[in-house]
Amino acid sequence: MQFLLALVVVGPLIGAVAALLPAPPGLKGRSPDQAVLRHGVTVTGVILLATLVLAAGFDHDHPSKMQATTDISWIPALDVRIHLGIDGISLPLLVLTALLTFLCALYSYFKLPEGPSPKAFVALVLVLESGTLATFAVLDLILFFLAFEMVLIPMYFLIARWGGAGRQAAAWKFILYTLLGSVVMLLGLLLIGLKSGTFDMVALATDNGRELTSSVQVTAVLAIGIGLAVKTPMWPLHSWLPDAHTAAPTVGSVLLAGVLLKMGTYGFVRILLPVAPDGMHTFAPYLAAFAVAGIVYGSLACLALARPGAKGDLKRLIAYSSVGHMGFVLLGIASMTPTGVNGALFANIAHGLITGLLFFLVGAVKDRYGTADLDTLAGATGAALYGRAPRLGGLLAFAAVASLGLPGLAGFWGEMLALFGAFDPAAGLSRPAFLTFMSIAAFGTLLTAAYLLIVVRRVCMGAHRDEPRVIADVQSYEFAAWTPLAALTVLAGLWPAVLLGLTDPAVQKLLAGGKS
Image (cartoon, rainbow, N blue to C red):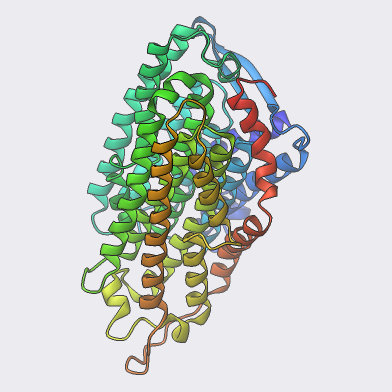
């Protein structure tokens, strides 16, 4: 188990280096480009298999216990250690990351985005995977920061070199926002480490902030919270996200929405809730207020983009929807209750599956029509995907209703549990305030349903007799890349205990200060 977890974290880095080397003569295939793309599929496939074996070997009877741990001294002077481990909180995120990266590599093998060398593309995707997996597996504050930062450079180049119109400005906006947030976050992490005498996240969580004064906790939560909020993204620190998604290639958008946004909310749960509970208690009402503002703002922005004549970009609309969906995650965390935090973790996974699928589908629509502009797609009578490409239209409608939180699909449980958490927040938090936040968030679900149903009507429905253009329906490689996401969305919706059975004991222990 220790070896497997180390392989999962380091394997993609080794694969990235190998991708830049010349292909061995017997493995070149039809061309060097095909060989390196096949290499990307193979490496991400091996990492996915390793995470599935890790999940199968995980002790499901004790999900609150750190498993597959490695603890080696790295920088003795600062007591920084190479400390790896997984529990019921990090394991689902590890599997989600490995799955989405593999599906992106498989999709890119058949549909590589236009840009420079495929070698560089595959290497960057693998470095991105390694950094994300490390973020969910490390148990040292300094290592967490290094892994957190490691993903920025590959994502910057994926947007800047393989993106669409406006890619340079979007990439710069992405890197500047996230780097500035990270600088502030590093100061908060150093403050915790120096004041408590350790950077070990397990020891800090067990101590539960007893070694830190209230003022230190408040300062640390403010500093670290800003860095995490930028990555989440929390309103009003979200403005880099729509530009980045609009400009990014399809697989870049899938990884950005499905994986990178989860790093911010994971940091809130793994670091701030157990390590600085007094500081989180102080800021919880403000975090909840920003969360519900993001829910309503994201929904209103989507409604504005969806209306006829607005020239709204479909990728931009899905990006704004992420601001709203991540608002539910933050609301659950702000409640500081097991119910709310479990809902936040469930919503994290559901968002990764559903929004990853949505970006795949919108990318496919853009490839077929040459545009993601809603007015152009809808035309005079509607894009009529149900008639022209029924499987593509059906999948888009399925992803949309999953995103709006239809009961029986994955999107429902996370939002419902987050609302329940806000209904009865942790002791000491103002219940009237959180009831108000819950009511606003519930109103946001109605707005979410409104804009997604408008999108389905305009893109999927309508007559197509006046426009005889034929477009390809779902191809076999698209079917292979999208089916796992659709199937897991149904599975998580019908059997939420699979995920909640993992997260709940770990959350209970985390909120209790390391006591099971």
